[in-house]
Length: 530
Image (tube, rainbow, N blue to C red; front, side, top):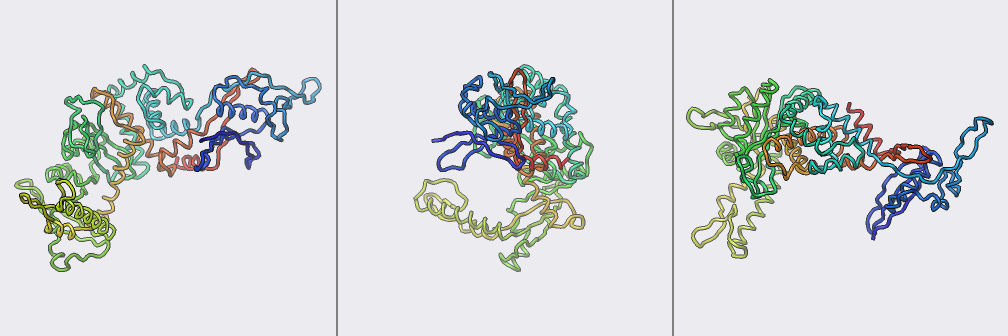
């Protein structure tokens, strides 16, 4: 059973830190920092605030009940008799001033967190959007992703400037009318160019966002879901730079094929920014002869993951001379004609064999063989599996498929139109490996920013929602890179650093929080990135 108590500790600066300790048997103590005092009056207020948090509902501070609690910097009892040196105007002699009863906490605020978030918003140039309510929605999504209706509570929980719910909804209506997405996207590219240099490489991928209802329309459609969901969904195409900062985000119908989303997004990016000299990196899902021809015709270079079905033919000379023997990191190149008729073009194919990938592939092959063997032996229900061959009532292992999988274990292929003299195979592979950053951005969008499920119904509302998510993702990427920790950890760390505003002796006083070493180190890293 958890227990909570108040602790005072002396800090290295000589101040007295007031902390609330939560102790759960078998777990590490949880420490909540209330604040640090430099005077008797400050210590008294912090002690009262801490006790009120431990036993909520106290209301007005009961100073009489605290009389027996040491609340002076020198640990002398009787806090209500604490002396505050105040010069007497007539004599110039210090006289004791008693603190009147009735002191109470007015509010606490995560001012440090809000300052960090607003600074990041400005640093990325998003203040070009002159809309305080839009900024509030973006920053609130970083603090605690929730519904638009609940955003008011999130803002109040950190002491941010209040925004009425009706104001938030009116701001959502302005997002599309005033082209907020275009302004944010331009700011993101400007930030990217400043941070990483010319936009040489851009990464592209697609994900799905589902809806918590069964109603389909022309946009929200049941389609191919990587998570095997049957809810209506939309597809979102995301273009990011080499650091994972979003550059474009586009909405597509839920049943639209992934391969048909790439060209519209890149065309919009080129039209918006007038940039042609870029290399597009995408996974094998975007691999189609038509897509590659369209990219090339638009003057773009590309690096796309290659499916391995053609690898035995592309690497026939190697297999004939060396069998399945490769050295770790070995790179082999080939060419292949892709497409048919007038659309047929010769493409450069780069392959690499990795010992680590080979071990992983072999392990997966063994697991699939074991599953096929159990099905063939009648130990599992009949279901489609890769290495099982079914002929009538006969079930057996497909040895030819197993041998081909063993042959290709450890191999990864890439298709590109960049000549070897401009970019060698190792550079092609290195550029493709940065593709994980767009996948990470999608994970952040779904988990940290909780872009799904989507509760809006009209297309304009969904587009506005994605614009908020787009801006929040850019800020999260910036803060993660500068703070050298996850956005979730940054928010959690800074949200606990709270200033306290109290009313005592007829005056309202705000006490800033004492910054622990880890918090100060985080703030120093964020500041040094400016």
